[in-house]
Length: 213
Ligand SMILES: [Zn+2]
Picture 1 (cartoon, rainbow, N blue to C red):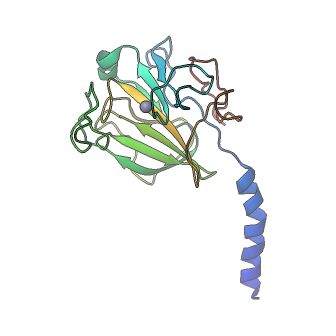
Picture 2 (picture 1 turned 90 degrees about the vertical axis):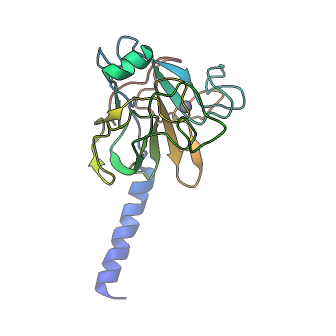
């Protein structure tokens, strides 16, 4: 074994446990300033669905929902004013789509490729240091602030909340993905997962905290 390879293997063995143990934790994925989601400007309209219940055994979900919806209380006028979605943790922009119609008020179920269909949302997917992803869906068109591949520290204004794709009104669909597992839930509760992925989960139907990990 050459010296260089042995050095690389030693480095890899040293790094692996450190990477595996460093769980990325999230902050609330939008601005909590007073004119944004603060002061009751945003509300949870749907949690992840656990077969008819949300993580806390309540009914704030709809069938098959895979993330959490944070709705703009002021609707389209608040969307026009502008509310920032923010990356919930350090990471890089792995994938994104922009330019689709963003004033949907229904889900076009007959054609997923048409406006307000399942495949016509503007979105950003972030990849985090522990290899998990966070998804930011239904964004307002042409408001994305960073190119694909950009690395960001926690809590940048990444795009405005909108209503593109399968969306009945302006909201941010925030979704958490675990490699090799798929969609998961950052909320911990008696009908959900045992471990929270929020730095501060907050009260049921309240908003998570804004502290970065
Ligand atoms: Zn949703």
